[in-house]
Image (tube, rainbow, N blue to C red; front, top):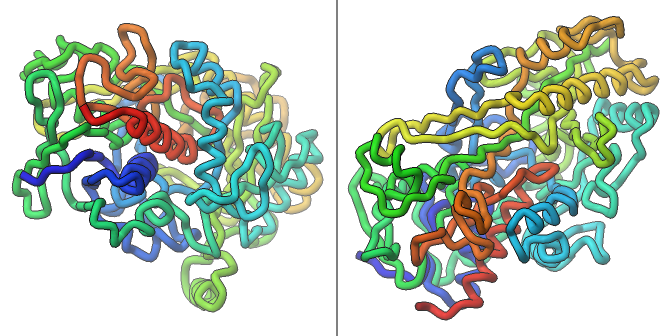
Amino acid sequence: MENFDYIVVGAGSAGCALSARLTSAGKHVLLLEAGPADNHPYIHIPGTFIRVHGSKRTWMYRTEPEPFVNQRQVYIPQGRTLGGGSSVNAMIYIRGQAEDYDHWQASGCPGWGWQDVLPVFRRCESNTRLSGLLHGQEGPLKVSDPRHRHPLSQAFVQAAVEAGIPETDDFNGVRQEGAGFYQTTTSQGRRASSSVTYLRPLRNNPKLKVLTDTHVTQLLFDAGRVVGVQALGREGVAIKFSARAEVIISAGAIASPKLLMLSGIGPQSHLQAMGIPTRFHSPGVGENFQDHLSASVYAQTRRPVSLLGHDRGLLALGHGLKYLANRSGLLSSNVVESGAFVDATGCGRPDVQFHVVPALVGDIDRLPPGGHGISVNPCVLRPRSRGRLRLTNADPMAEVSLKANYLSDEYDLRTLVAGVKFARRILRAPAMASLVENMLLLPDHDDVSDQVFEDYVRSVAKTVFHPVGTCRMGLDANAVVGPDLRVHGIRGLRVADASIMPTIVSGNTNAPSIMIGERCADFILGYAIA
């Protein structure tokens, strides 16, 4: 059994950052990833990331039939490769609002307020344009402005300003509210995932060992302490690794609680029902599931100006040649180029985010409307609905049972309806009205009841791929980890990924997940090996 100082389970956004920081501090680290290496070109070319979804480099998680979205099963793709979500997402760099982190601190997570996490965000960041008190320019994570701006993306920003939203060039500035173009985790026209930015510089460091296609199935214990892991390797052979100091689970908001429960850490009654001996009764494991849910608003364009057809034939060839020549053009785009943050309900801070796609898009189980058009996707930033994740049996390879309870809280439905109405308002502003022929799937006039909007939202609602919260951080009896990310009741074990968020942040979750990995490294390096 190979022996290491630290074993990190999951080479995603947080796991790569954590492993790199520990290795750079001289620790002997093993990083285990269930999926293959990030060696497919579609990962690294920004404009082709959607082609990775549904491949062996993504987990295609799905919920149980959801009662509040017409009994539909909602698919939640997650990264399954080096870099995790940061290798398959739309690369949008958002931290959230200062109030998000101050709320964490006030709810029982001392040391996680905005003034605590801001220095870590700045340390992570290497921004090509922004600097000062809110931005860093010397960190590993590359952040840049888009190299390509689609005409429909530009028209959305102009129309949003005409609809009363202030224009912004920094969604991570003093004020999040505004409409503009997203900065992305890209560098010189290529994706800058946590694997590329944190791991790649250490590829020849003998202190770091990275194993792909290695699925961790069990934590190993000595009395009440975690001392290693058991995994299935490439040939399906069980292998074990030991950790002198700690094991850190960074497998994401679905796989991290799953591994805890498979190892006997979770709600005792559920573990008993699965035939798993309880090592520690932790009732919060798998609870508190949260996610950003959106509802696309579609508009058909007068002319064929959308992305439809650009991935085929001579158009695709031309885009490929342009990208190869100087990493510019459509393939350098993250596709979701523009967006906005708005206070759609009058709550006093942005509660809806718009992701704009210059094409008509559907979902994994639903085809988009036909023809050329634009999709404006409002999502609820701080949903109140809470879900639950459970095992289906004791087989580590079995799917979990996930009841997300999307839209179970009336607040989420009201806010999403408000976002849909706001999107229609933007689409009617002059800059968009000159391009848009008509709206699709909803009546094109304003004499529409809220019930029509609610029914529509329930029929098209889909995830923005931001699951969090299932190993909640806190000091109360239902919290899974403490503010130092140590798992309550178990020695030698931490969790460091989006699952520890008490409440979801107001925006995309990649940058906060990387920050969590960085903070975990800080906590670990502040302790002597015991």
